Image 1 (tube, helix red, strand yellow):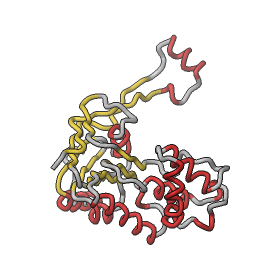
Image 2 (image 1 turned 60 degrees about the horizontal axis):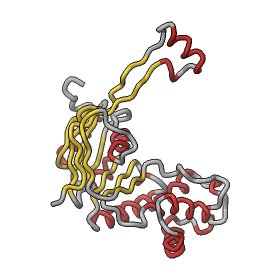
Image 3 (image 1 turned 180 degrees about the horizontal axis):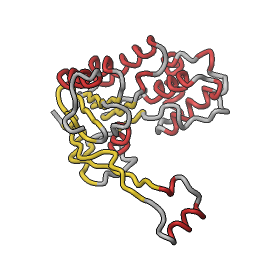
Image 4 (image 1 turned 90 degrees about the vertical axis):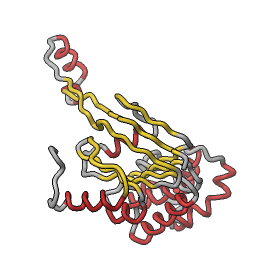
Length: 252
């Protein structure tokens, strides 16, 4: 089976310090007097995994584990401090669903705007607009300003547009939790359709139920470090036991 995505010993760091909390003038004065603090924070450290065609990888871990930071490196938004990431296909990423919209434009206008941002032609959007409305369940709101929609409704529109095409690698960050239970089920069914089409998929979710239902592989991160990577069921069982305090992570 073709390897679609491979990460080898990936580490990602941030610079943190006083410069984030003070103005430029104050920072300049401290810099001249050598009275400022700059530290390196390792957000992700020595993470490795491999994703083959048709795989769905679930990334799990508590808040601050480094999940979203790792995704940003996978799609190329951030450069790893060390290690490498190999991508063997076009990537479609749904990270911050409600970002990139104009609150003053209508739902319909924003649908075309987001489509253009994703590289869709106007002809393609003309052909698929009805499909977007039906899937997002926003027909009665299509002429309303986008800012009047709830966050869940905004995310439904973004998901409906982004899932129109069949990517080779699909990246999802908590997007299957948008909307009510019925829409979540519909979103999950759409993801299964994309996976069945051969896409390699990464899903970040706090819902172990979703991970168990959709994923065949799991990567567990804790405080930026890799705890486990492999088959879904044993890792999810261990992670669930960790959450309930039945097991601990060695040294962490």
